[in-house]
Image (cartoon, rainbow, N blue to C red; front, side, top):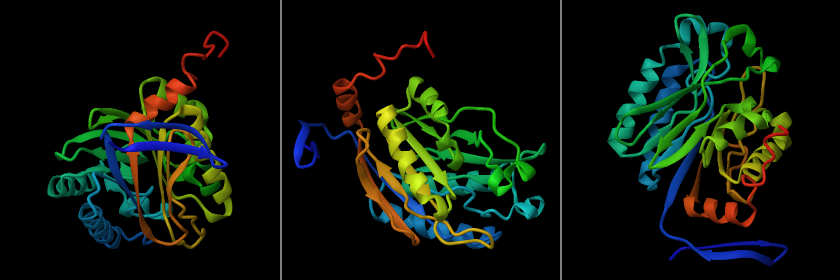
Amino acid sequence: MPRFIFTVNHVTIFEKDFGDDKMKIACLQMDIAFGDPETNYQKAAEWLKQASDAGCELAVLPELWTTGYDLTRLDEIADKGAERAKAFFVSKAKQYGMHIVGGSVANDTGNGVQNTMVIVSKDGEVIHEYSKLHLFRLMNEEKYLIDGTDDGLFELAGEKMAGFICYDIRFPEWFRKQVINGARVLFVPAEWPLARVDHWRTLLIARAIENQAYVVACNRAGSDPDNKFAGNSLVIGPWGEVIAEAGENEEMLIGNIDFDAIDEIRSRIPVFEDRRESFY
């Protein structure tokens, strides 16, 4: 039986045998070609194959992986209804028998462009779409994008999960709402700049600890004409432990999550039972 052990300063905090309720996840930390969907689709196809060859059951892509932040050309390069991205993910999910949390794409809705995540099951079913709720004014998102209105909650492999996008991590109440509604794994595709990499890492660990949930965060690598990006994709456990962490450059990060660990940790510190909802 697999064994979960967590220590602090070489002191064992808890130790327990778990079952085999695990999932192997790949974060595809791409260097996105600025404003060049064709190149990015080719690269994503190669990386999804590598994730499948590595035995991963789920793959995650970064934010705006088809276009990068080429926002001024979205009228030319945005994906109408995200239909191309959906067809691509459906095909690859079926080909590899692998769930895909499709980062996000510039989605031309007909009434404006949204920053939209597409989730596809290993059977090729489009499970959910989530459009970024919080637009980031420091990168002019509000000038070219319209915000989403729906939550990111979905279910894969019998587990409730939720999607968020980049700047969303600065809004802990948005994460808590999804967790209160059942989410146990929290996905965060991003294009987070290197200049604020300390915030990226600290906020993600905090979201994992306070929600006693896994956080799987896939950032991009490389740079565009205006920004250098941090990479540093992370898989974080529900105790706040970093399970896997990438460097700054392009790479595929693989981490295993154990759903049984969530229940164990929530039983140790019953945060959700102790909430004083009448006060907040």
